[in-house]
Structure formats: structure tokens, C-alpha cells
Length: 139
Image (cartoon, rainbow, N blue to C red; front, side, top):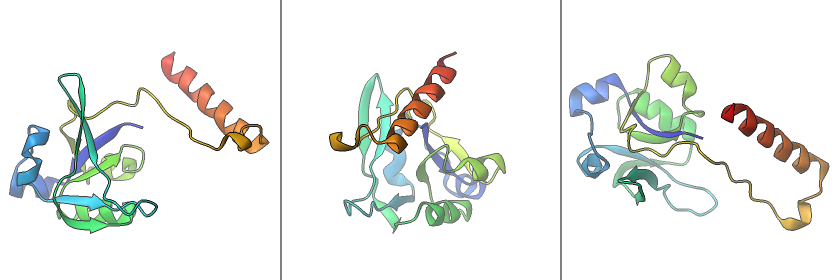
């Protein structure tokens, strides 16, 4: 997945657009709480070749990606999302990427699963599908 910071035109007109991740504390950020861990998802960036994780002080925290995107569309703040999950809003011009030169690319995909499930047909099919997609992306 490619990850990106997104905001609406209205948000950027009212608050400006951050130029570096260090400027995020001066912006309204909408956090996404992970159900399994209970923590707020950290925003990941690459700066000078180093991976940097930031936990922005979120004025609003939600536990739904769809709700997070709706709030961003309404101009309530910036969000950190995968391009895949926000593709509709981006294509419709409702949300716009920022800090793109700092966000990590989708160079790799990790699949985590218990070793005992390694030979299950459904899991093997998923792994093979991901491998085919990765090969097609490289071509």
C-alpha cells in the first residue's frame, strides 16, 4: 500500500498545507484507533532515508476508516490513510495528498499468518495472488 496524508481543499484553504511532518502539531489531525491494540495508529514518514513514526496529537480520534475519511472530506482535519482505502475520495477530488515526498512508498507487502496455517488452500491462494500482483507491478 502507498500511504499518504490527506486533506480537503477547504481544510487547506483555512489552515494551510504542511510542508514537513514536523509541522503536523500545528494542524488538526484525525487519528484512527486500532481495535485490536487499542492505540492510535502512528503516521509513518521517510526523512533523509530514515523511517520516522509520528503520533500526531489528534483532536479527533475515531475507530472507523470510513468515518475518518468523511470527517476529512468535511474539512475537519488531516488524515493518514492508504491510497487504496481513500481512492474514491481522491478520484472525486474530495481529498488531496500532501507531504507526498515524505510518505513511504509501497515497496513491500508483508503477510503474517500462523505457521500452522501455511498449507491451507485459501491462504496459499492469497499468497500466490499477492506474488502475481507484485511481479506485475515490477514489470
